Image (cartoon, rainbow, N blue to C red; front, side, top):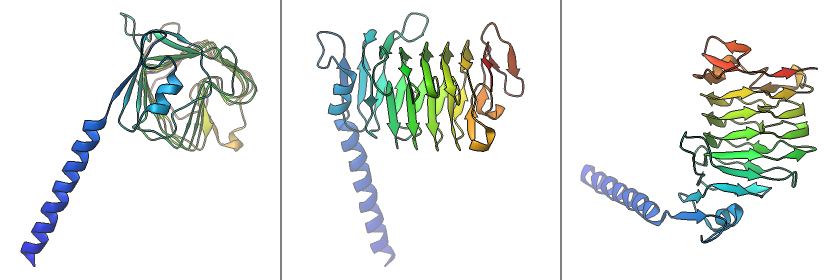
Length: 246
């Protein structure tokens, strides 16, 4: 009986190892650039991708909106300047419901080195997250205006991560100009907000949270940008030049 169990265990381990190797072997890198690449559109590359794939997006500005990662465990990776800041920009030019949306994605959906700008929404933030927890790394949310929920990011009911991200010069009528949501606990590390304005914050009774104004300070850690006007001293995070009313 013991020998039989050992045989079964060995077989299961071998099957699992084969599965992992097969998945890794089929992971691909898809290139996006304005001309000369397989894909000229970020969304088209996402449509063609599978779990584990990496989509490399060349430096430049892409006028796209309503991008969906389709619950895929993929990495979208933009280019960077010499100083490490993102060199790949997605500018929606005020079109669409949002720039990018997530619905049910996990932490293995990774977004790196992208600038999200140009949104002029009447309902949802430039980036929306519904029951999703993507990992956002070295991203900038800049110069977005929304008359609805969230000027930078709106998150509902999950725990996304923002690492080395910046929220600059965004505004919203409701919730927040930075990561905002309901019944969520985002992880925000080495990130900061500057010149972002909340025109009217939601009532605390509605369970809204704002990284700039209402979230627990424990959500932040490890950054000291210039022009700071308020600091969550317990976690060494600086929130710069934010204003709000309501």
